[in-house]
Image (cartoon, rainbow, N blue to C red):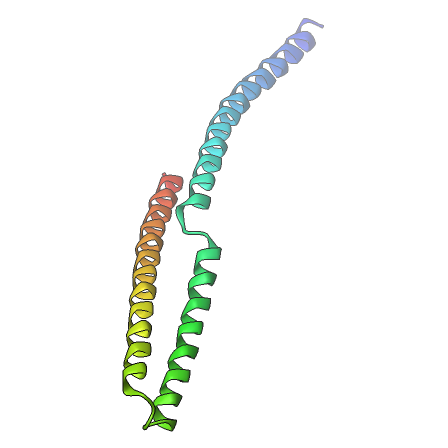
Length: 126
């Protein structure tokens, strides 16, 4: 009978030892999950949002249409007032410069965001 009780106690100790190891692992996993959640939040905010990208794309398309219209006028109306055509061209030039600045700013923010994402991914790999 004593041997049978000791066997039960021995199995209880094994279970407690397992429980202790499980708790250690659960603590580790909880820290990893919390870290991953924090990194996921940072990933979410690292890149410029899609709306500016779509707005920039739309503005590029509108500028392209304006160029096509202006070129058509240049080709179809060689006798049209050259001063007015130059003025319109100057406005297109300024519009293009603003578009270039927006593009370069978006590209810079995109590259910075991607670099941040790569950094965060390396953190997850640790």
